Every structure is written in structure tokens, then in C-alpha cells.
Amino acid sequence: MKTYTTTHNRKGFSAPAKLFHWITVLLLFIQYTIGWVMPDVHKDTQPIGLISWHLSIGSLIVLVVLIRLAWRLTHTVPPEPTTLPPPLQTAARATHWLLYALLVAFPLMGWANASSRGWEVSLFGLIPLPPLSPTGSVLGHEMGDIHQVFAWVLLVAVGLHVSAALFHHFIIKDDTLRRMLPRRR
Ligand code: HEM
Ligand code: HEM
Image 1 (cartoon, helix red, strand yellow):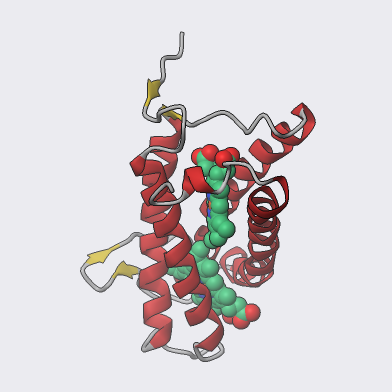
Image 2 (tube, rainbow, N blue to C red; image 1 turned 30 degrees about the horizontal axis):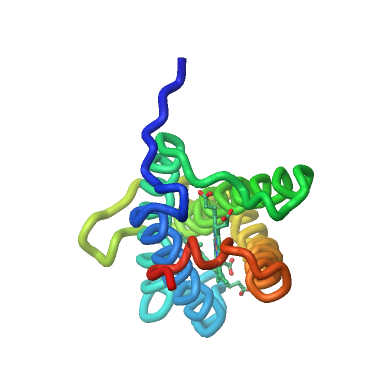
């Protein structure tokens, strides 16, 4: 039988859950900014400057998300707010798992694309990571195109998620947002 560790009190998310959540938000914000201001990537582009930062922050995101997911799969979180009808509670939970799935799959596509270009992906030049696809791989190349499209898919999913959080806070006026915030009023 599966056993879970309970790490939250009935009022809100535990400190690690909040920390993982807001670190991910911060890293994604930085990563999107870099992704959109860095030079366009072409056939002979070298992974220097902002592109190098994109690879390093991206690797950090992969690491944080994998640790977060391992933590999440072994711990419970507070139940969905009862202010929602059951189908919407299910939809909210499904959206959270969709976000987790996107957070894992999306950076791996960028990584596979970087590897197919023969770029070494590393954590800030300190810890080299293995290539995810062979140099010149057609699949790795296509992953780059999908990575660009998925940047928008993740953004739309996050947009829905944030709208839901704000709807809870300002329209339904329940505790949903407060229980994910660093300090409860
Ligand atoms: C969640 C993390 C990530 C976010 C939010 C993100 C976001 C972006 C964005 C917004 C772009 C520009 C898309 C465009 O020009 O329309 C991009 C391109 C790119 N990213 Fe990421 N990225 C992430 C993770 C990674 C990782 C981990 C790597 C590699 C280790 C990576 C490698 C690349 C490459 C190589 C491109 C250029 C793709 C091409 O033009 O073919 N990304 N990324
Ligand atoms: C970069 C964007 C974001 C991502 C990827 C993200 C992802 C997630 C995930 C995966 C969960 C589920 C936690 C769990 O049950 O394990 C969650 C919960 C939550 N997020 Fe976000 N989030 C983001 C941004 C935000 C922002 C900006 C807000 C606030 C406006 C927010 C508010 C919340 C709240 C209130 C919960 C708890 C929902 C509940 O009680 O069921 N999130 N988020």
C-alpha cells in the first residue's frame, strides 16, 4: 500500500511546496526573458552570451523541477478548495499535473535541440550534462521548433492557472491564493 508523508497543515501548503512553487515561477520568468531577448539561433550560432545563460538557467530549471516532482510524488498537499464544485476541483488538479508535465517535457526539448547542434549543455559551466540527442540529429532539430511552440503552450497554461488563482482571490474571495503565499495574513 502506498504511504504518504503529510507535510502541510490544514491551512495551507508546506514551506517546501511554497519554496518550490515560487522558485519555479522566478526561474521561468528569467528564462522566458532570456529566451526572447537572446539572438536568434541559426545553423552556425555559437552558444555564447545570453544563449549560454539560457542553457544554464534551463538546466537549473530541469534540476529544480525533477527534485520538485520527486518531492511532490512522495508528499501530500492540501485538498482542493471546497468552494469549487467537484468537477472544477478535478479540473484544477488536472491543470496542476499538466503544468508539471509541461515543466518536465518542455525544457528537455530545448536540451535535445542544443545537443543536436553539438552544444555542450552544462550548469553554469561547472557541471556538464550528457547530450540528449546525437549531433546533427533530425529529431533533435525538430525538438527546437516544438520547443518554440511549447513556450506558448506553457504560457497559456500558466495564464489560465494564474487567472484561476486571481479569480479565487478576488471574486470567490476564498483562501486559495493565500495558502500558497509565503506569509499568511
Ligand atoms: C522551462 C524552461 C525554458 C523556457 C521557458 C524556455 C524558453 C525559450 C524561449 C521563449 C525560446 C525562444 C523561442 C522563440 O524564439 O520563439 C527558446 C529557445 C531555445 N531554447 Fe529554451 N526554454 C527553456 C529551457 C531550455 C533548455 C533546458 C534548453 C537547453 C538546455 C533550451 C534551449 C533552447 C534553444 C536551443 C532555443 C533555440 C531554439 C531554436 O531556435 O531552434 N531551452 N527557449
Ligand atoms: C510560472 C508559472 C507557474 C507555474 C508553472 C505554477 C505551477 C503550479 C503547480 C504545478 C501547482 C500545483 C501544486 C501542487 O499541488 O503540487 C500550483 C499551485 C498553485 N499556484 Fe501556481 N504556478 C505558477 C504561477 C503562479 C502564480 C503567478 C500564482 C499567483 C497569482 C500561482 C498561484 C498558485 C496557487 C494559489 C496554487 C495552489 C492552488 C490550490 O490551492 O490548489 N501560481 N502552481
